[in-house]
Image (tube, rainbow over all chains, first blue to last red; front, side, top):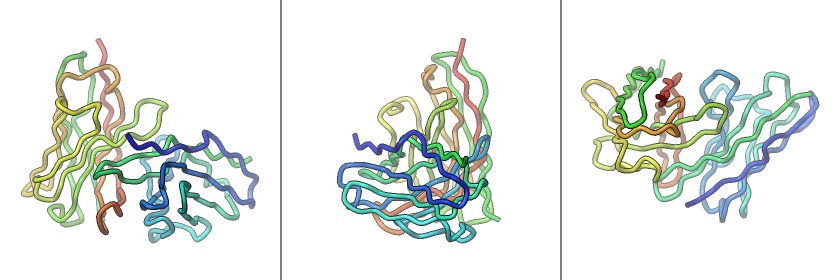
Length: 106
Length: 122
């Protein structure tokens, strides 16, 4: 079965850039999206179609996808961005989520 | 406002059954694929099942095939998950999510419901 791997944790200082990777076999041939989940809340879509932002998502969130890796970048990270982030793709009409990354804003 | 509200969770013994419901509002329910996604306590997200707009196509994660059944009632704007032969490892918060399909393989979950907790324990 298809798997997506993320680093368990990423730490970033306020105002700096956080990059979260998502690795999967030929992931660049698929479309990736990203979800943010804060403690006790439901996931929220922050990036779809590799790099597009839904309305209401701040411009500091951006995405890319090439080769075997998709990347979510948070520029000018704010304390409110502290959360778990999950990448997601599709494999034969079945959803696949990444292992998740906890972003800590120090 | 697009809204998804799950219900039906609770405590059930191993081997038991439970039926989850998801009430949709604020959009044309019959025009969208729908999904169930679950999250075990302290763990990551796991896709569980998908259903096409008219119910003609359904897909499941291997671990629930033959035990869970996804269904929908477009007249009632409702999504369901019938869960049989429940196991301890099925313990999780179950989320209902709308699937926005742009093209094959180019889809995303948005929005998500608030989730309903299923606990399988004796």
